[in-house]
Image 1 (tube, rainbow over the protein chains, first blue to last red):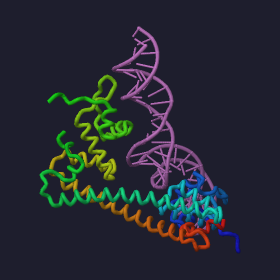
Image 2 (image 1 turned 135 degrees about the vertical axis):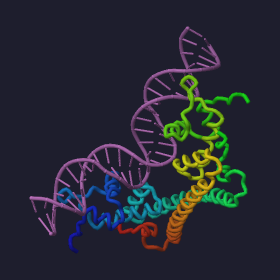
Image 3 (image 1 turned 120 degrees about the vertical axis):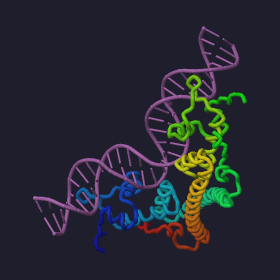
Image 4 (image 1 turned 60 degrees about the vertical axis):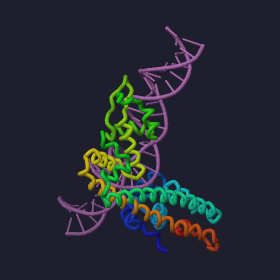
Length: 138
Length: 138
DNA sequence: CCTACCATCTGTAGCGACTACAGACTCAAG
DNA sequence: CTTGAGTCTGTAGTCGCTACAGATGGTAGG
């Protein structure tokens, strides 16, 4: 019940594993509230640690900062917003799956080419061939 | 054997499915050679189509522009460089696989949360909980 | 010949999500 | 009193484009 222990930006950075410059950046773009100052130094409290932790975890899940902003708004809103949160997450999940599919396509082509290269009976370079190798003729 | 048909940037753009602005950008950063001019207009030939095609295919495989630059250098170099090409591709393949692994981790967490949300017996919002929901208490 | 219209030109600024300085200051310990 | 760590502001860089604005070029129709 003591007054929330005030911490400085360095401590906030340590507790959230978030770069100091990034914290100030989040403040600049309005993702974190402008904190009060002790002297000239930013002074943070318990709920700043929570909020920034939330942001960082959402970022780790690949949400964009705009999506995070929306999530923060919804999180403050109470249970009515659970549906909206679900929709945001579901749509983001689709994005993630699409990106995985893209990367898998790349992986397949690359792996095939490297394998062909290892087999090494090709007259030219199978990797360069895969990229359309007439460039060499220049 | 006719002199290589000279084309303008618009035609190059169409043939390579590469944005005009992007072509000029590639020229600016030295990825494409500075072309001669017909009047004030850039004039491209057969090997520009090939080179830009190569660049675009490499980009589709996720190579960075620096890697593409390296590949172009190696492609010009003859067969001695095949090993180096292989190494570049193999290392890029590792990157791609790492990114896939990252995304899969995200996918799992997101899918789990959305599923928990659908089950809908949680008192709060399982999605927000997954992100560390004390933010709501603010 | 004039006009309309398209393509092309140069140069600059914006995106997203940071990251990296430079150069000033504050504050506490030795 | 000095040293060193921490913090401050402000600006510019990263990557790979993309999007303008505003000036020309070349061509076709009237």
